Image (cartoon, rainbow, N blue to C red; front, side, top):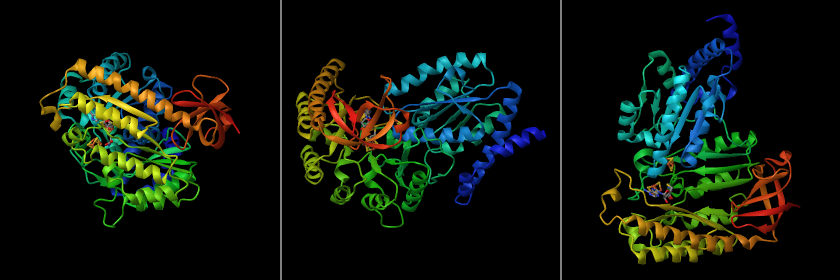
Length: 489
Ligand code: SAH
Ligand code: SF4
Ligand code: F3S
């Protein structure tokens, strides 16, 4: 290697956070070596092209994927790429995919066609696919057969190997496909590039063991694995030292946290530990599972001043009969009584939910039960989904799939009720003053900023970039449906 390049490499080589990580895992040191090897390649290519090299990550799906993308971007930046949002400018394009519903899946194929065109004009360009969709064997077969221009394919269990996979691709010049079926390994502590300096997702567990009959997540994310509480606390302490004020604890079913760990630790214990972290201002979590939401968790939440006043509590359906077919382990009444129990302890709490319409065998009566829950639970907002058949899940084989026109009609009626209930509820804070974490400049109006209340509702008010990342008091002047217009107090 020429000495100039070596000097450049030395400048960007292992930063403090990587050195610390080496001590905690063998796999990490392997990956750090690959990062080093890729750095050399990228430096060389940069010199040849006489310009920086750009990487663009396109993230589909949920908060899990968003957090994974921050980790993937951390590795790409460490290797020497500069981040861009512009796919046409990128030398490395990565799609982090979702397959929870068919439309998420179709969007990826649609965009791959465009990438092929870009790559023709830029032969050194690398295209990589990862995420939940890649855990489906049919998808990988299709990519191997019909999308040969894709350079790297990997899944949800080995995102930490990105540098190794890039290295394999550039040294073998062949399509690299590396999908695992599951893993016992949790590899953390590689560099992470957060989207927001002041807030961060924190994985507390991976995978899901619930097997709701409609859902593909357990098949593509594997069995539940909790991280050690001290690792989580340490990660959050580091984040706080780095300017983070709000964390979102991530897991498909956070109430199961602790299962399989040596120490007898529960989600409530973990929350109590995190609550003690000095300098941390806000704690959120996603997603709780209704029937596992214990009184111990409610108790910790009611004592804490940091745990936010918002719970995302997916109901999926209001019909006990259908919930049973979905393998959701609660009845309509149990769900509503949980909502009441929480409200009794936390009167200002906001609830949001996920609802599926058109699950196989859904009757008009079942659907009316769902509308009833929406009214009774008094949600602040609801994510509504049309049932999507996922190959490999039990529900895909259920008879009585609901005709499309019936589903569409129910979906529209659900939206009307959701709008009506949620608008009415969100309005209840009008005139009050709320603590708001300022998240950024307002997208629509100059001279305005956007912040988030503890109950997750957005507020727009006059302000400038200097406020971003700080907690301020804002008077909630007018509710505009799902958000407020306010004034800095
Ligand atoms: N673990 C979380 C949700 C993960 S998936 C939970 O249990 O709540 C996010 C949402 O996607 C689910 O809550 C569900 O409403 C929706 N979803 C999952 N599979 C679906 C399918 N096959 N069709 C339509 N919506 C689906
Ligand atoms: Fe899917 Fe159910 Fe697991 Fe949520 S709890 S990820 S809906 S299987
Ligand atoms: Fe989608 Fe995977 Fe999340 S399937 S919803 S990105 S866990």
